[in-house]
Image (tube, rainbow, N blue to C red; front, side, top):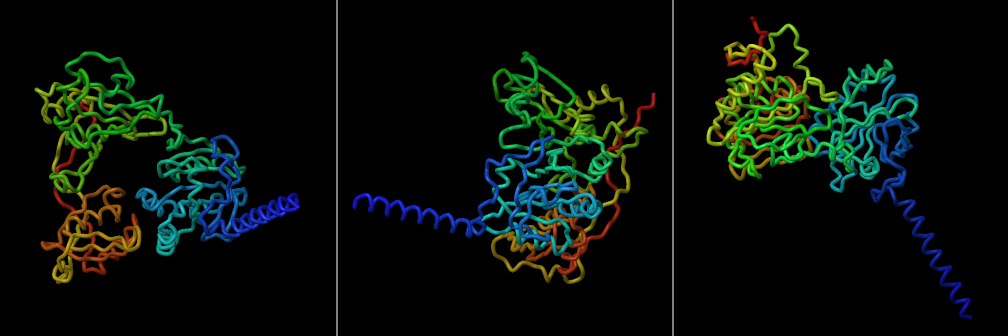
Length: 468
């Protein structure tokens, strides 16, 4: 009798186990679980990519597909998320690439199936408005399986299924090279386990570059100006501007000021030396709209100003350390100017020239129409990266958003200035798409505003060949 009871108990437990397994089988997708086992492995350059199964596929002929379904074409997998501005802003370029190479290449967009359920509707909105041709997958587990850390993260797979590159971006030129059988060099990307060689290129921001383990031997100096080639894998960082307030506060380097730019192009080095700004004028700068964004090149050979971060060619590191008692912004800039003159020999001067810019203007009566009804200053995205409601916002803060979404600053590299003559705070709702200029212009027009090109006189930093 006891044996029968034990046997019955085992049978009940077995039935429970089988029932639970069946439930999980039929409910797994709705619970956000990946159909890929974690031990499947991550993509490795030079190896056949694991045959991942993609669930929740949209804008494709099937709701579920595997990597092998894309064999025969180049496959570019782009990982993205609603929090990645660069990813969202890249949608138009990715779509142009897909259209250009549709016969030989497929781009697949992968995003997390987030708990807020915002990535899918966000992508649907962009897909419908920009007529995107890339299918998309929503599977959070793939980010872990593929060891993705920072975004953008791109995996390039050839028609035979071999991983050819893992990078943070790809452009049309490099795709042309791949299709021609060449082997272009790609920038590295970020992995959770530090595959970029972070141990090899450790950097401690509390001490100067090449000091105390940052690539050199510690010395007791009062002044140092150091210019080196940048090596892929080294950190890439810089202060936004030259300022004597950057006091070193560690060890023997106390009471010293510095400027440090690592991974900078020659253009950025000259900007820092002559304007005090490393990355050009931003919209919060007092010189914005008065000094042109970036230096103009009037040289016979401009190739030295083309930075290749994949190989490190024409990319530099500069470190300046001076005693705090003698540090002023002008003196530090003068030292840097002298060093660049000695090393590269270019003539550099400021000139006043008529330069293009973009104007935000208001139609008659717009100021009254948009005048805020009061309340707290708020910015609410009712549709992520698309529909935004601004309440009691200054016209200048709103124009900064116009600059960000239109691509005028980041893509056209031209200043955007307020010529609306609106003094009061505004309430405004816009429906636009990042880096889609036409959608931004349409959204402004609906609210009585417009974007139009113009020209005005500005100071311009001009770099010329030396005449000896």
